[in-house]
Image (cartoon, rainbow, N blue to C red; front, top):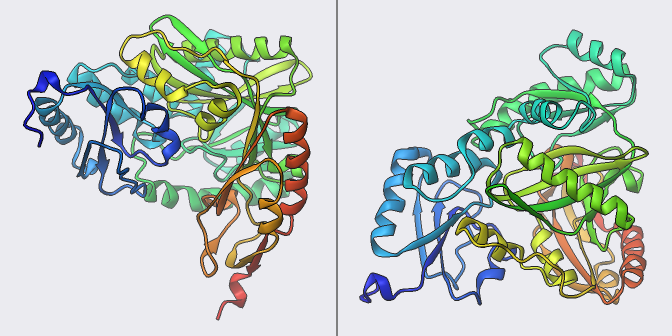
Length: 430
């Protein structure tokens, strides 16, 4: 422990439970602040950055009282300026702990709303309008499921009400597909939720109308009654590639939407966070843009994955510094200072199995826009499609001076990704 007086040490920004990846802290390294993490020792996210001044561990399963006391003890040694949360499952605990410590964060009521898709949809309808989002219903049996589909018509979407990142989301084009998907999800969701230690939100199953259009997202920084929105990020999903699932193959900027369409989407993002009662922090808002304009998919109470590097590389926007700013009561800066283009691509195999090798990764590296490749799965590891609950085997960053150059390389990468994974099917193992 430092022997310097408490008042002479730089303020501490403390990450709550996990820091996950460098994208979630790189924007603060040169900000004149000390970084720390109180890591949940049960978390799958084990990163402990060497740049951090403070790294401590505890079991968050010990409960809010224990977490409050541990942060209070850290506060006796270091002045805590803000507690940042970047983990979806920890949003309610983060809100409760910060409230009890008198530290700024999302309210408990808002945290509960962002963790429940059914509650979220009710609030959108009540505060924005019935058509702000897709029609949806929580279903507990096949009779309810089929009644909803009969009322809306096919296709419909089936999804968990308590997860994120397109886990187990299915498009169902007829009765047989819908029943089969429902049975799979009903059998899988409770165990998967327990494995993720999700206790704040029930393992509900939602069925909803299918929205035709393109996918997009906006990050919102919130300070009391003010909301700052970032430029729109376009999302290329598995269905855009001709598949049947909604995994995020690529997140891309600059957007292909018109200036008027962007403005309308950013305004709806601000309406969404206000509808959920978010008054402090950062929210990730997702949309489908169709023939009648943008409609809300959902809101997450933390930064969107890969959005910080995208916004930094394309526009010079420091999203994580903005997150710190609103938590300490300072107006954030989200105005672009340059006009570049960037994308983050996360390909998935079509089928589960043992990874034999990557085919053509050298051709990916040779693309002019390829800036970085992070490989998470290696030969011999199990790989799966996203809709089966898997993380991405690799992550590819593209950067270019112009959208045209970036989009040309992205089209080439889409072609290469079709044969990128050489996978041995599970039945052939051994």
